[in-house]
Length: 275
Image (cartoon, rainbow, N blue to C red; front, side):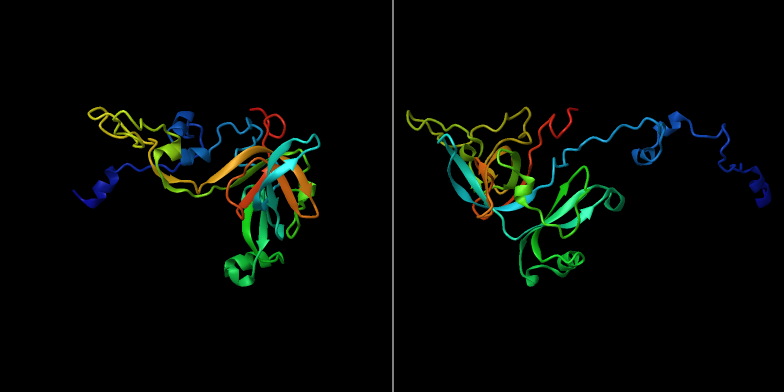
């Protein structure tokens, strides 16, 4: 059989046209992979209003340094344990991100001035674009709107927070190292008398034959502390402009000298919609 006869028997495929008979049906679209299906719109008119995601803040916040704890006497004479938070030079807007340029709205804030040699050249170049002093810490605050913010704008604490406001404070907890189950997970100890041989041991961690393994997430000894933690809805007791400190009711993560992130508290129904 010749090559010309073989080519005549091979069926030729027609190019895809936009005729109604060849348009992809809805069942064909449902069989597409998720990545390809996400770019196709079956019903463009049914658009829902955007919701506030969990990563968004209720408002712009600041960074501070934990100084320690003390007792505060209110007007009625009650003693309230408070954490004193100080503020070094900083809390300057270093960058404003918008939906058009970065895909989301956020304000980047810098804190704690340092020497030039303490930062890398990319970090220095990023700050020099807006003529900002060298800052050690850079953090973003995702907001619904970034109107009114511009680079090299200083954030004043007494303008953002008032006495009596509720705030969320996040920081790194004190590292405890490798600890046992009693200290790490508040387990009970065994009998210390009556012939008991189990005092602070962990005990059984699972059955033998079934399932014959240790379940994931089992509470056991391990590394404790040194993780990022947020304490929510703490009350601002006093703002001292002369000392440039804020007194917050209760304890916050970390030891004195630790970096803290203070933002307005997220309260459902007040600054977060009920959904």
